[in-house]
Image (cartoon, rainbow, N blue to C red; front, side):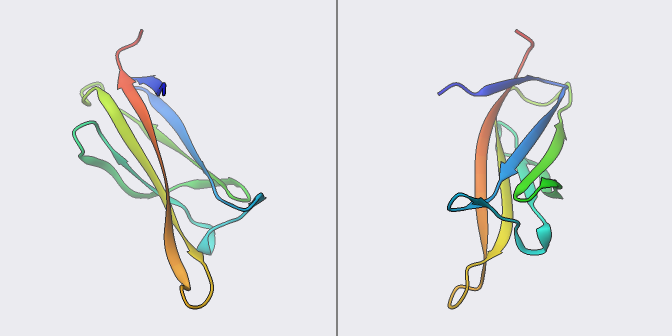
Length: 104
């Protein structure tokens, strides 16, 4: 599996797509959040709210610093969905990994 690479010190766009079967769906309150962990496991973004692009699709621009560690970063999108009785509202996560590196 090849990871998408971004240069350290740059800004990149991350998106999440929420679906039920083949239908785009919005989470509770039409709010999606993300946490970003650097290659050392340190949370560098905590519960940041993404922007809605369209039904079920949310985005956020993540900025990295020139001093951030190189390596694999985890982007963890999460939102709450109503699954009905008996579960009611539960949190769903969508995770992805990207690589922060020097410019090739």
